[in-house]
Image (cartoon, rainbow, N blue to C red; front, top):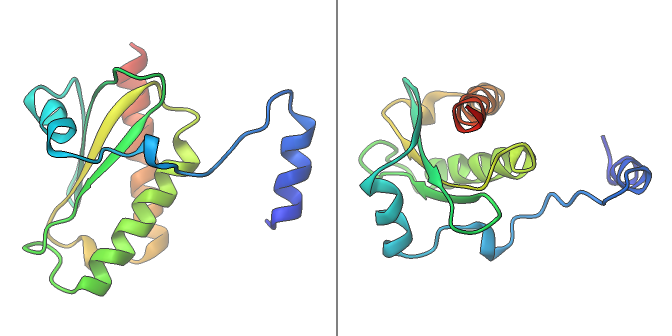
Length: 134
């Protein structure tokens, strides 16, 4: 899929769909992270990853990342994981309700290849979406 095909698809829709991740869609400070950690309303767990989420105070979903050096030793690997998580969130943000979500890494996440991580994250986002819509 190229950029031209995305433009054609979005021009056919009544409202254009943006897949960017601006600063307002990110959890940025300790207070915002603590608010989610205090009492997460929704949890989606996998052997290599955990997503904690809480109903947001704003009308858009937001993302926070906790990728521990303890679990993923190399900075190159941590950065790769962060890019994949942000990309997955960007593609799924339009299906998600207004939540604040934190993705936490676990041991072994760096050993997975990119398509496997994408598939795992898509399943976790779907779990969060189902739990939040009930």
